[in-house]
Length: 131
Image (tube, rainbow, N blue to C red; front, top):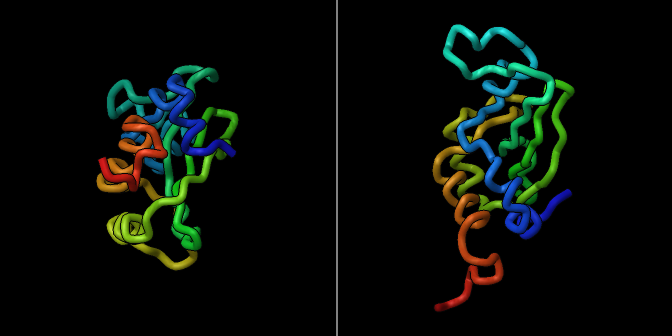
């Protein structure tokens, strides 16, 4: 599993993260080929297409984390689990709708912003320090 620091250092990976990708959209694009064509050009056109995106497994509460996935037509691979603040995790789950049995959810805007700052912002070791 990659760490946050490793994601930050891998600029190709960091720049490839699709912040608009949702679990539902990924299923539609990669597992149900052809269903997206009616919604425009947002569909998988070849077996070499891939996406990198974060999801929440809402049952992973201790510690609360988000998971970076690499999705292709062959399947999904978990690349990283990043611990996130509990209040952001809970707010994102609540916004997505908590259902019995657990769900895979997209990140809300606040959680995306928090992650994006840590991936693209100042070095990780700066956080929590006075400047």
